[in-house]
Length: 372
Ligand code: ARG
Image (cartoon, rainbow, N blue to C red):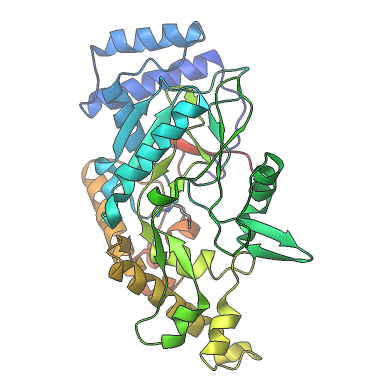
């Protein structure tokens, strides 16, 4: 088992050649190569030696993106890796072009709630150039306003909110806990530019509870499609820092983490009080009870809104099927136990007792260094 695969020294030329070689062999083995193997390897090695990135065909790029998902140790939803829709936007280098492509991404991913996995790949990162880059963690995200010792909104996004304000973003005149952030896009050799979030393309789901009528008055909501923008897609020695991808939510991501974590919306005490629970002693299990109702509200509201979402029991079962499929294909599954086991009823799901190994597999998604 290897740990922390994310921080590594810059690859040497021979390491890059090896990575190129490995990738094209994999693509060949899985029937996704766009030419004779020796020729494809030679072309890619020559391109890399000349400092040119991205000699993959569209077919090879799509295969690489799907495999990067298949390899992502922290993702429980990988049963669907083959269905990823890959949009080849490698010709797009400026922020105006990125903006249009990102709007299309939202459209193609959301489909009124019939969500499907999509990835958009912009021009690769080249040494000496910052962009293309998306500063937002995700395409949808709520502002976090620091206010005298507390935060209005999502504390996760305080730094980005301040960055947007410094760039001239004007928040709504009445600030709320759910103000969608604008996009900060960096084209190649451009300064960070502010773009308004296309509100009509960001589907949001108001949260309510099937039996607790007061729940709706909490005024909670969440967006339907998580489009992750802060990971670098790496294939055959080339890195794409602007390669946003999206699937659909597992309910616990919202109900157990985003809305419940103490350093996020921290709603457990509020929900527990409304439920009439004693919150002065942990042994009343008020946190567990509040978590269950918060998660029930998320799953119920998304279902009622016609928005695809998966509960953690179903996702765990699907992950088991993914592992079985991979085994049948003769491949090892890389998995991080602490990410795969859901943050609710973990021990009541089949993944709890599963032995997992976090391997370094490529192509891959890497985390971008935290920006503060
Ligand atoms: N955990 C992140 C969030 O709550 C989303 C990560 C991607 N999740 C997914 N289901 N594709 O916003």
